[in-house]
Image 1 (cartoon, rainbow, N blue to C red):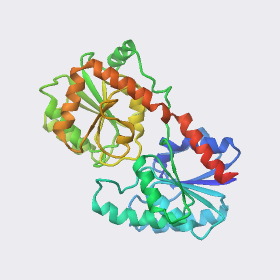
Image 2: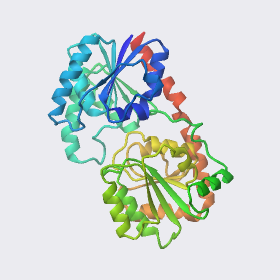
Image 3: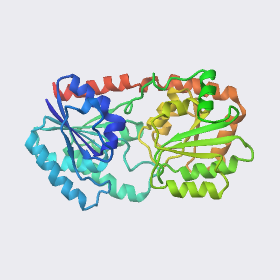
Image 4: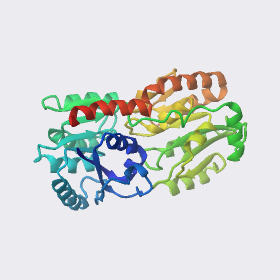
Length: 375
């Protein structure tokens, strides 16, 4: 069968979807890809036999550039006569489903990596994205969700439509790559990265943007630095807020406490030298960075947002804190700082709880979904 994968930007393919495409190719299917190429895909062996079409998608649903994207993608879909189209990310998925609405012979699957409307989201998100998703669901054979809130929302949103709703375990995590280190290896890593054995190290891997909310973490470190003088946070990632965040950290005298690492390809080692994983985001789907931290056996302190609350259970593998509650977040970190046994207990629970989110398990879930539509 001929299948098209569509995402707004190529980063989504590179970060999450290679194993899924590999599964389809291994079953003898032909897979093409359509996206805006922000990060090159030429170095991915799995994709060497895929046709990759560059589409000028914009992340903004009201951008004029998406009209051109619609025309380009429509021509590709009509010319290639696909049996199934699997689309990801909101803008690309809306455009794709608009095109496919008049092509009933094509099965359309949509993976929601986190609806932009959710409990606690701005009214603006509900006014813009909810009507779009509700309308587009009419032209969808299946919606694949990855957290409980989105699953229930999708069920309710499509209750009068003939749409199958699935809940999967996200995009999966490679448990072997992130396996917890022994204390000796952890010490060796700290030496390698020029960090002190006595440092209390927090870790957060995410794009530096307003949604990931690293600004809140900077404030939290400032609030803790007198009580925890050896505290450090490693921020892996780049993004539009990087310069602003760096300037703020410098202004607050936190240059030695907050380390901006930029985009990294050594996340497993950075997690293995850390003591606690943190996440401050305002919106999530089912965050891979949390699953990676759990695979390493780390305790967590996260904001009470969808996706976080699916993975982190209060007093089991970490603490779930109200968004932007600096006092509560600081106290949670301080509790872990002062109690190594608590860190070990939470970390052990993290590893046990992440087993269901392994890449093998996710591939099996997808295999069963694809089987229904491709056989």
